[in-house]
Image (cartoon, rainbow, N blue to C red; front, side, top):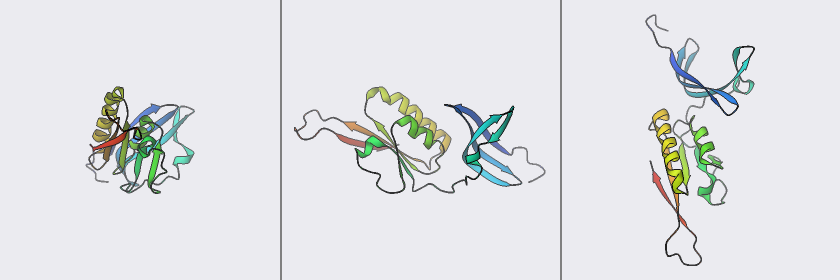
Length: 159
C-alpha cells in the first residue's frame, strides 16, 4: 500500500428483510482487492461479524455466462442450461442482480402498473453495476385480433 493512499475503498451497509448486507463497491488493503461484492453480516454483542456461510465464499471473477430470469419468460419451460437461474418475481430477480457483474438479466413486464417500479430497478442496476450488465425487459403482449388458439406472445428489448 502506498504511503500516499487516502482512499482504501467504498462500501455501504444496508438492512434488507431480516438481513444486514455489506455492499463492497471497491476495497483495497494489504490482503488484496475486492470489488462488486456483497457480504451477509450478523450483529452480535454490539459488534459486526461475517456470517458463517460468507467466510468460505470466494468472490466470482466473471459471471458473463450467467442468466437471471423471471420464470414467466420461459412460459413453463425448464431452465435452458445450468447457467440459468429463475425467479418468481421481479423484486427477487432485482435483489440477486445487485451482485452481478456482466450477467444477463431478464425482467418480465405483464401490466402497465409494473412499468415505473421496473424502470427504477433497471436504472438502479445500470447505475450501480455498470454497462457490462445485459438487461432485457420482456413484455407479454395480448394481440387485439387473435386466432382462437393463440393467447399471447412476448416482445423483448435490450436496455
